[in-house]
Length: 202
Image (cartoon, rainbow, N blue to C red; front, top):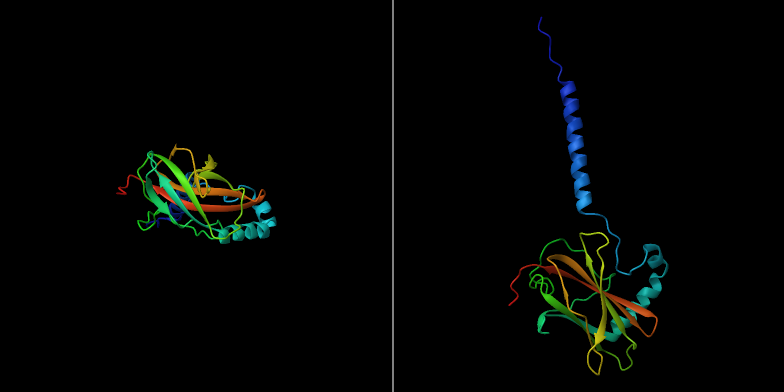
């Protein structure tokens, strides 16, 4: 009588091999896309949670006091793109890694010397004063990649336009963060996304 073949050992081995492959793929994906802390407020989440009410009050005062827009300038200070959608971290919505041609800040020439010009237009007779602005560039795909772009310098007598130093920005998806200190010890935060590629913006 012919002995019936038992395929169970092969099936078990196949399942084990499949599991090992899937775990390897998961580890590879995790290493390429590490979990990153949100740098929106430049402090630990616990501290943000403890002070969130004051953060929101300070942000609301700033938002009600100024209209704002961001100009991205080339080396000759000509405006490459203008972004009028600067939002606080609590207003910003997550986006996928996909270029949106309708966004005014998602295209300019790769690896070009650029400068940032943040424009704050007062909406009240007595708007917050003693304004100091720092800019940061953060990566969505690299942990601990936050770059300090330095303080923006007021340009002009009215101090409504604040300029950064020139810098180069590599190809990729980036988040620009502005930390704004006003009236000595109050702070507001603005951010926007940049998709940098070899895109013709003319």
